[in-house]
Image (cartoon, rainbow, N blue to C red; front, side, top):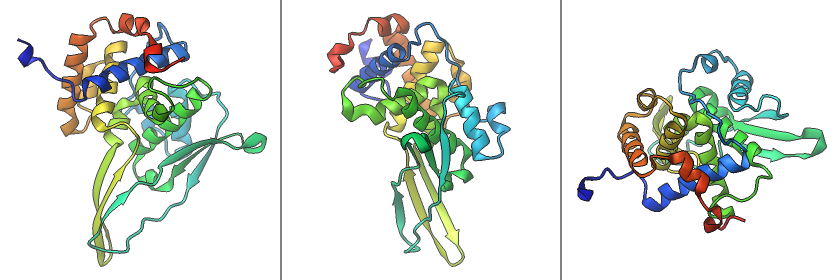
Length: 254
């Protein structure tokens, strides 16, 4: 019967790392016993926002970081359109997080291009707030090279996995008068499949409505979510206990 087991959309090693990262997050954030609600596209509170600042404040509230001091800045950027037949690969950062001294304090910057894509802007805000949340918490499982990956994982852990997964890859056609072309962009550090799996882990851990989550994912990611959910339920039926008993020292964590 083992031949017919549903395989997760990521490798076994990556699934084990995601579980270990969730365990690490629960420990460093002191979240044992806390239930975190899922936040989905179309959320009424987020839909009320009419400016980036309002949306950021609502995301902060959902992350229970409303009273964390932070200055928001927009990065004005221009899309390069030098060749109308060119497929452009856009790898510029969509957001940044930094501490800039006593005068400025903590600053989160976001790309102005995201104002046309509110869900992608939410994903960027959550990723950068996750940097803020994890500052000074130590090194994640796997070591310092996986800090950004763990930050993506944290955003899914906080209930925003659908936003991260849906915004991880984007491919669009653009036109500007006589000029036209295709643009591909990527955001984040975890793959779409890893983000979907992290979303399934958060759903399993917090008893989220899996059906409500699935229909909000891009159609081609829905099957991956079902596969991840089935594999997690089968391999980690007592996920909370598994996470509580993981020896993080085996992941080079001290």
